Length: 459
Image (cartoon, rainbow, N blue to C red; front, side, top):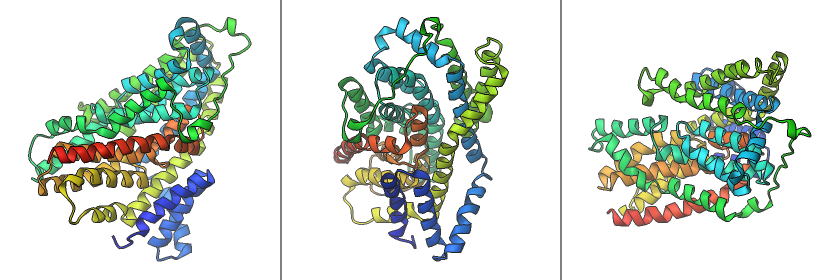
């Protein structure tokens, strides 16, 4: 609270720098340094030391180390799928056997359907959708930026609408805490389920993506994107048309996430660790790929490890972006951005406007911090307390927090799902943010109108 408007200015400065310079790492470091300068009484030496000590301190948190290792090892999986011929075999198979989806619409719809079906964890959702659909999108002239948009738009939104995952566990925990502390009354599960029809941003986003796919809607920077041409090898006739080399490793990775959640939750999948589960899922997948590709001579032992190390190298820039994104999130937390925004929310405000304002403040918080989960943790207690005090419809307020968190996260260049979506689609991260933003803003505007109407109807 003591830093006032500076707590908002610093994250906005970082985001503006990223968009202008198109250099995310330098922009993040600049924003972190500016924030630390404020936190360290404008002493540049102390701020410099705090920046690089802060990077090292992040590795002391297990979930951060696991997420970073997950990111770099995903690069190995993608590189090995290419080296083994799995991608070529998959494209030839789709071209010969599944002609209905061998088209621009079919390729995008494949990414959409995969994203909707896999609702266990947002990072895995975006990763699998991008990996499976990328070669077919390249072959049919669909830009990587559009693929990244589809991956990003079916990750967090679908995970929040079908909360049989760690998302549901977090949200349920926040609601039950409010019930236990007698802030609100009711049953946590019933309230969470009742909030789903009011999760307007997620619902609108899924509909907007379908419109983009079937009507080929290109707005803003998306009009100027250039597809990456996929060229089959010269010996296409000799490439065995099979989906298994591509799909089996991905199925292993997807299957291992709920197994990991079950084991880390000691039998309760809702209490499992998402970071641990995806970390072990990629490790098991890499072991499976070795046992599958080497004996079948798709790869030699030497080429397997060559691809493994090259894949890690490919993801180092992405890992650095995520590392600095996490650090700026911590700096923004220390500056009190969320508390200041919440303070701005309070006052003589009509109850009709509260759901809309909670949605907008949650959106700004998630946009500035790059985390929807962090936003839920901050805004849910505030929102539920306001709902109880002003006798508002509680499921609507829960949905406003969820929708706002996802809207801000979806729009933010420092969000982990945004980073992973651009990585999975193989497009430049800043270009993904630029091309996705107009669609996200349109969905946010529709959600704002819906929350305003719902606030009036439920009063």
